Image 1: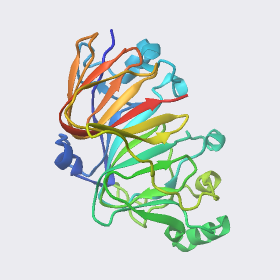
Image 2: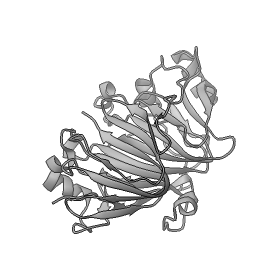
Image 3: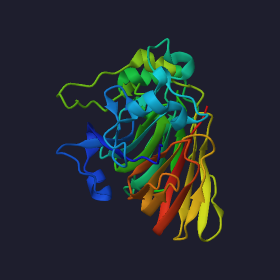
Length: 326
């Protein structure tokens, strides 16, 4: 019998990373500049290890090899039968590279994987911003010219953000995360990134990081001007409110805010994931009797075969609810 799972995070050193995941969420990270915590991953050599219940020590790759139908329900796997999504928390102490991910129509030709994603801002410095899409009127010729003279950042639309803001990023949308941000990222199971510009810095090995100009130019949507943050409003009463952040064929994401009354959630024949931003939640599967106490910065995977869960906040809570599509 499957049950709700939590996993051991997989930490990634990044030149732009820091120690905020330790400060905000108490994550036990090693020395270094930790830029990413992969919370739910089924990537080659990076499969999340189960941290709770009878299957503790097995990993998500094992789950997908032996229980894919029970995990996915009506959701479709990624390539090679892998889990369809990748969930991360990012800590950007410096700006990330200006980059793009290939759209599905170009990915195979470019020998990459398409990557549509969303960013939920969990923590932000006072003047933090995102670089997303192109400034209105920028043409491909303008873009190429500014790549050659080192000023391509001038082509990017810049948006100031605060905690609670959300940006949806279909593949093909140029983007970069600014400094001073902690972000919950939900994305297709892909690790293909084409860098356009990296602020003239060097990588962890002391050498400039590779740029991918030809692949980037082939991937960028040059009609994508000045996208907006998600503007959907909350619905509900004083004890429970929700709003859709993303409603895409690949995945849906809702933000929920609740007081301390317990409630039930029932997956809709698809896998579901909960990501706690603030507060505390106890999640119980009545069938397996497995219970999880989620703390901020933790993700929980609820297989499609789990009929329902009981959610009990012990303090007011803010969390994301993710369902895989397709």
